Image: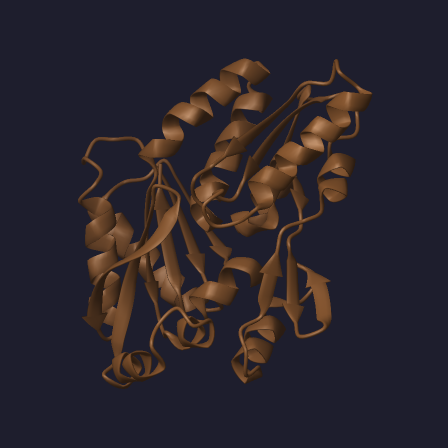
Length: 278
């Protein structure tokens, strides 16, 4: 059993098999529909996406309380926490605040908090890597050094089926957004430097997915040993299609497919595909 406990937040969209394999602890963010708030993961994803489509406003997301993080730090193990990008959420600063609270009471406790500078499946890849290193017997300092070094090597692109949530959230002009949707344009995003940036568009699903795959594969060389993570917003068949498209381009050491949960799904909307490679 590892003497190091790996903790992350629920925006990581980690495959459940990996969570169980490495005994990763996940601290849930909050998602609110008006006055009703629940913890990410409590609501079935099918229900969440259906409810979000029917809700006139965008659900609100918020980071866990410092007390929630502090509770997860309990125990005799050393702690490594990997959080959603600090440029996208206050989760990182909250985890650090909880660390300081715990160290006041227990100054000998070893806790390291890492800002992954990414999210969703990109964050998930880093969490899985940290857990793997811990299981292999690497020290806390060694794991932190490795993760800090490789986090800048992550390739992360995605396709958005609709801009409906961007319109609801006031991030895009409603008229422009509806016009783009009406013309069947899909938006291609890149997660880089801790931010989500629209980088291209394509007409129709097939063209968009081809572009996303090309963007990812153009940033890795043929003989590199890579891990692939695919996230889908309630569209498994599309994710399986993307897996085949990626395998035509590259042979991966490991491939995982996972659902995009409520936190990230609030911003991607249903039908999004996220691809991350490390």
